[in-house]
Image 1 (cartoon, protein in one colour):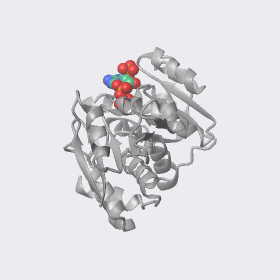
Image 2 (spheres, helix red, strand yellow):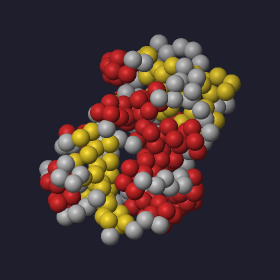
Image 3 (cartoon, protein in one colour):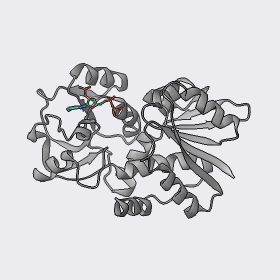
Image 4 (cartoon, rainbow, N blue to C red):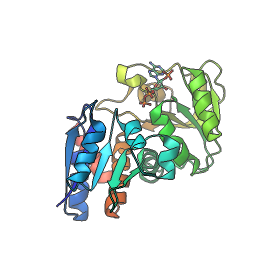
Length: 266
Ligand code: ATR
């Protein structure tokens, strides 16, 4: 049977095996999907060994996405632009193909599953780390009116904005209302909130947190307390998995039902 896995460190709480097995059942694909605890010293050797043993594809998660990128022989354009890889597969001659499905997974979740078009919208993105870098290009493909990156360390917002030819700001200088606000900072991991001015919220503002949890995230609580609606990033997790599954198996699974199952199990 075709073998797939997710590799990361830590890995025990990864939901990817559940998600991919559910996709496989739904679409009747004969495949197995396991989990590999990535070794901080030996990640590259682990990947090579997986493919040498006949493995078909890997998902790569924290903290290895940049190292996966560096070991690819062929990179998709979106992986090149993201500077990171979350999906690997191997070619006939052992060459390693890398792709990045995080941004497309997020956009598909927002646009197709949650029915929030990005086209023509003023989008504010909080954060300028790896997570944000991976989503800018796929969002630009939706032709928003504007994308503004705001970050605690403004120089990082500026560097990323220049790379993608979008706008940037510090939190202190942020002005105006936005239609869509996306939190891509890791602040909520520590229960923190970036210093966002209330003035960014307008009557129709919709918010999305790339993080997710059993309880609403601090960012979503902040948004709803100011009259905005929004959603967390559980659907992005399923969305990036669905994109990877499509690359490997050429079939597109239904995402919404899996998000629902994961939500109930939390
Ligand atoms: P990831 O790969 O998850 O994006 P990262 O590259 O370390 O992780 O980036 C984390 C992002 O969250 C950065 O934009 C960081 O801001 P800085 O560039 O100023 O460090 C942001 N971040 C983390 N903790 C934060 C906090 N408490 N308040 C505001 N921003 C925070």
